[in-house]
Amino acid sequence: MAGNSFHGNALPCNMDFLHWSCHDVAGWIESLGFPQYKACFTDNLITGRKLIYVNCIYLPRLGVTDFKHMQVISACVRELLGITETRWSSRSIADPPQDTVSLFLEKKSRTGGQADSLTYQAFLDDMCHRESERESEIDMHHKSKGGQ
Image (tube, rainbow, N blue to C red):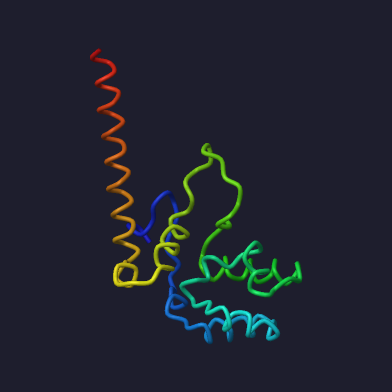
């Protein structure tokens, strides 16, 4: 999927979950074998766009407190979303950048016209543009230091 990756992260082929209602999410949770948690997702209005926030730290707030269930649900969410790391994992500034799919899904989790119209390609183009600007600023800073 050339052109659809940044830092080696490709967009999952199927992003239909972004259009899921909280009832669709609850049905998916049931299909995973956890019908007892359907209400946790509908009562908290967890739509497909909000799944990026569903992890072992957030699940107890929704009412999912069995640790094994939390692990399975979190792993299934990451698999569905096509992400490899958890949003709240401890990160060092020395770590490589967070995967772009996660960053894109965080942007899409918001409501409003801007989030609705955002495409993955536009998101990648913006990231590349911002990275180029940062590199230019760093180059200019180094040149000004060298000229003193």
